[in-house]
Length: 104
Image 1 (cartoon, rainbow, N blue to C red):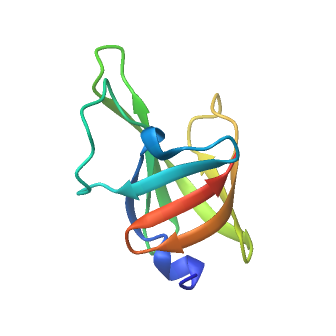
Image 2: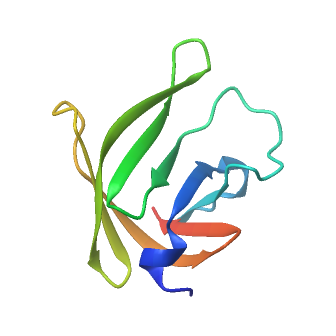
């Protein structure tokens, strides 16, 4: 696994077609995804800013800004600026330039 703090940088979209019972798969935004009615994802910036990408009512995207930080070698916390959105803790199984694997 590439160093997590470096590997995370970029915009990752959920490739739900590749999920398993125990993992969620994310791919870089430019990945050739099959058609979908919307995709969730995350964008991690080097300065600790983050964006949670959600699915809008009309199948478009919504973006909620926040912050991210490493809690451990394999755990990332994402906190939204919107207090209605709970802090998310992502457990990273693997990270490479073309694939981010999270535990469910």
